[in-house]
Length: 148
Image 1 (cartoon, rainbow, N blue to C red):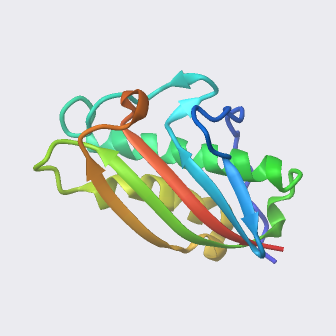
Image 2: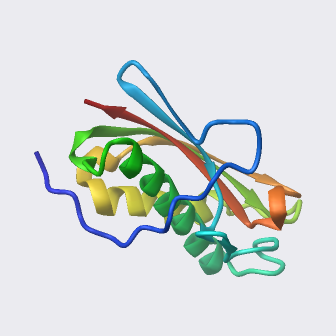
């Protein structure tokens, strides 16, 4: 099994609604949508291509993915080697109606999963756009993993 690349993870945030941040069903673990926060600090707020550049959007998506991994790491008792596959990633980018580079923004999250998990980080994905997200955040990302 390929080694896991070490990265600094943000502190796990508490849910801001009536849901669980992580749930296991059989061999699959689902992580709820995570925002671009470090702890309680929202680091990327606004619309990509209006208030933020595409590159800043990618950084926001990467931070969302770090929060997903932080949730997963705690859930798996700090043993990310149990991850067999990143199965699916879904991301929503807050942007103007005419913006068409949501997939490029979401590469920030996808590239991080590949960086950390190698080939086990390769996944299917959807990237969509919206005019608003909770707290005004720029990006929100959720993911599904197969674990042992």
